[in-house]
Length: 435
Image (cartoon, rainbow, N blue to C red; front, side, top):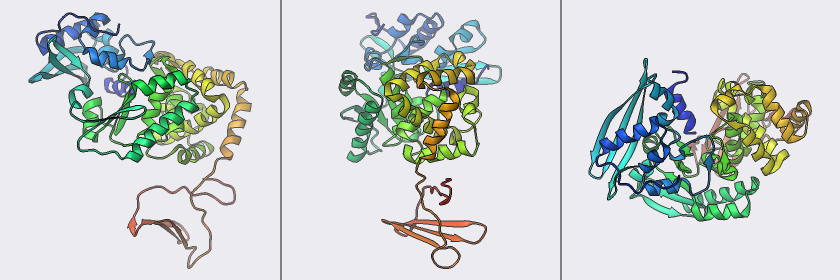
């Protein structure tokens, strides 16, 4: 389909203020038909008038604007993204159904082309002004626990909990990240007043809200993290980068976008300091090359286990060299329309980086290698001391790590209070520092 509809939806989910005073449609069926026609006609004032006024205002509260998108609140919908192909008939679109529940409704659009199909769902609510579209969080999270922190508007599903320590960590992360990105005090004050959204719920509800299976995601349409993790710093970092920039295109080269989130917020529940040695190892052992990492196709040719940590360590280096303002300027220069970024070749990307850093590429990569060689490996260093065949026995607080060397393999046993523990070990060669 010129790029899978589902793929495009997942890719974006990585992203006139007031509705008309005219009353909304009398039925959700009329709302579905009117909204579809407004999108196909690219009548954005009419489309906006069919949304809740509160949700529209909330989508602009932080002053984040995507310059190449006509309608921020619905910029992830396939109806909007594929409107040209829907209008021409290349993609067949129809209203698949409307489910009513009192003053609420769910609207389903079915899109298809050849053997491919996709579904787009909206929520609607009736008020004194007729039926209007509402955000999924407005429809599903109204009676959830709400908690406002220094920088966040938390919505917590009744079956979920979040500790005070976790809340403090989230706010501290916002403060530290904004400082690292050189966010001006006036913008920080704006964020303190208007808040980032943070919705904590189980994974099935995350999927229902965002439309794709995931543990968590940054919704660029509403400036909110929707997640099943109490401290999802990676996704929060995505929003903070865009907040710091304020005005930018929706798409960014993935090594920049994901590298920034890893360098600032980590990934997989692991801190950046844990992932940077992994990124160094991935690049040093040529699991992928720096040249491959830079381009759109090169990045997507590998899985996230290889590309994310590598992008993170590169971003950490660039942040150190460029500073917050310089890095944000480079981030904006490596953002654009999807078609533009897919055409960026290695030479173009390197030129942007070298211009920002003030170094030629060979000098820059040499400096990057020096930076990586100084990274601490962490972990536990094996030795031959102990009983039997190279037995290693280490106690750290309530954690016990034991290793047995049978000549071919190292067998590791990790226990916490006598119970097998889940986690990861980074091993370091004591002679050459290789991880």
